[in-house]
Length: 291
Image 1 (cartoon, rainbow, N blue to C red):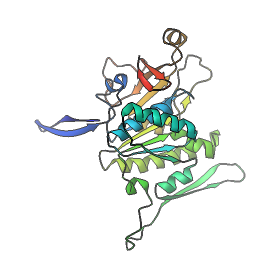
Image 2: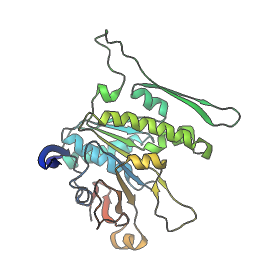
Image 3: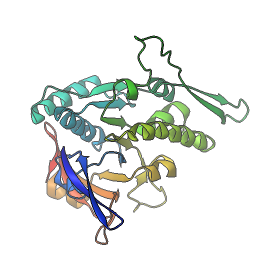
Image 4: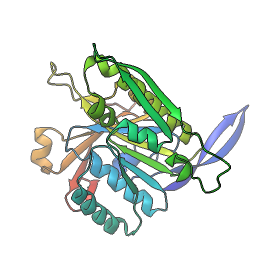
């Protein structure tokens, strides 16, 4: 984590503001994103199952927690507790810290909305099975009760960083993935992102999400794109694709080889290409590192 000066221009005058950057410690990421992740920007990582999305997010969560940042980590897929303990210990040793993120397991949108201080409900048409009216109501707070805490964890705990692993799974697992349900899923996900967007408006806040991968089954050359529809895709100003690499890569670097590409980042220069890959390694007892 570091602070940099960002130059602004207004009416031919120069202004400087201090911007805090969340460095990853992985040069392939930091060097391609002007130093790291920037606050106020929704960022996404997507890839195939067992590619290491959760490990990468845990690695970043422990790094940032060790630097004094308050990190809330929403686990929507039920990460095995032994895996969480194993990597947690490894990352504490790696970053020389005894601090850790706040882990919260959330398996359905009702619980997540409740944690965010909202009551959530929806109606299902019995004949078609389609989801109808979706109701999300902000919970009231009795300001006269001094000991009453805010039901919204973003207000109550005021985290610097929120990680949702994975964002697309929380609606897919509980509501389904049938074509007729996709509009309702998109609506729920849009409402969730609106809540996190409001939280980030306070300044200095950062949201990182993981997503499943969507591929065209008729095109074997399709490397995939982010799952979750256009709204999720366009809301993420940083999109990183984590990939196993091709056969030649694995023969050269081994099964621990991974590669990433930047589908989107805040500033794309003429030399940038969303199909340019950068190599990483996922070491069993260490996490992600450079080749």
